[in-house]
Image (tube, rainbow, N blue to C red; front, top):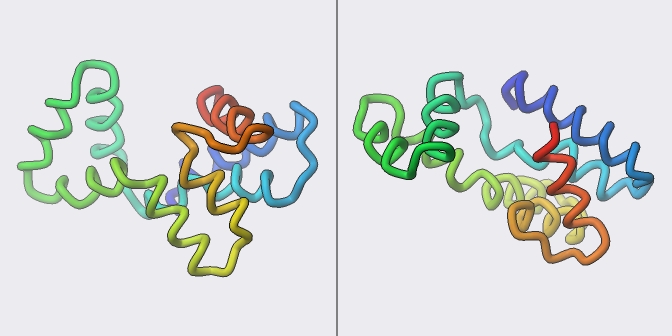
Amino acid sequence: MHVADRRHGLDVVRRLRQAGVTERDVLAAGLLHDCGKADTGVLPRVVWSLGQGVGRWVPSTAAHLRGLAAPLDRLARHADLSADLLAAAGCPERMVDLVRYQDAPRDPRYGALLKDADEAS
């Protein structure tokens, strides 16, 4: 994981703990929810963020530049990629689901808490 994602994961865990979460699966999901971004560098992250604020055309256009297609694809699919990595590592299904559905939570108790902690960090 990129150092920014490791720091972000720690911040998410801190916020979850502040919200009273003590369950290991939930805290571990907070820590590792972005592991699928792998070693994505600064430029693709900036492009991705611009796309979220300005429009999807930004990353779509930038993906045509050499070296940006794969990292932008990883950013677009990072929730599924992260969940797949956790599943392959033998993590509990609850943890995998929290990570897979981090943008559209399905877990009635912890999904929204994870999303809120992620967005606030």
